[in-house]
Length: 388
Image (cartoon, rainbow, N blue to C red; front, side, top):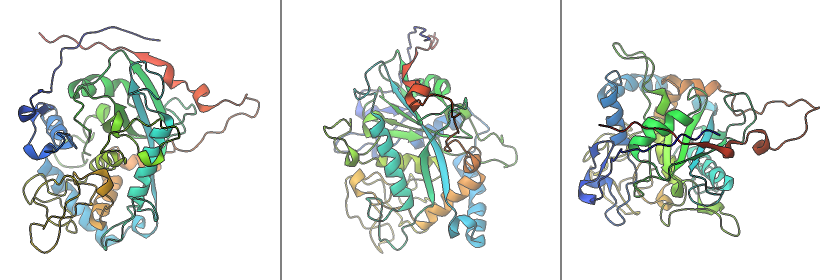
């Protein structure tokens, strides 16, 4: 056990909703749900923060200039992924707590973690008979799916759930990026990293690290900072109430309790933009998503910017309630598959075998995964220097 005590003086949230900031960026009015004041997603602010830290990271315009011809080429070639090839991404979920027993907030149960993977597979595969199924003509099975890792970075068996106790009860955006992620991340070329945490600002639901391309002249081919690559959410929006146990053990938000925060954030991690393009009637670079005026909340019926039909409020990349969401489109699928084929630390996941169980010697005593890899007993307290 390693426990180094520290004091952190990093404050990034303003308690006044009108002046709320994340990652040093003041939130736009549309980022905050006017009814319940929740911040559905902070990926846009996080991307600006990452671009400010790394001059070699692609700007939004550079990224779109890089990805557009790849998407065009992919559509014309009709690659194997469009004709039955399934991409399976190994996942590790870092459950961050401060010593609570499993099932006591924020130390969510294995069943709650597993329910989140179930929901993402339903949503990304448009699984018939599940809440992720739709009959929309442009609704697509993305042919991307997720599986909890079976092998950890040291070659040991794991259940893909990495429980870590820190001497810190909640986490600010600054501390997550500077302390938590670098201390806990598993090799992002082999795993998709997910973090379930208690945010200091408990109105924030989640955010993701957008992919960074490689091969663009004058830019770093590393794909940006590897120590922070993944998706993060508050513990009470990680998982789905649909799979709660009896008696109830899931710790979930009253509104955002169907697992769609992570379906949304993983969409960003795979290169999708918000459907309104983060500006009034903006471009999300997917022609089959109707042009939207702005973020939508609840599950409204709204005429699109071209006045030819309704906005696609059911799209996972809007800000609507979890129960409203059930669509990724064909063009969104095209974009995600291109990212999986070309982006740094995404393309290597296609050949990762971390979701394949390793053979144990027959003479070894039979151990449960938790006995073999007792991640839940790790306790860390890390130091962040005081800023003068």
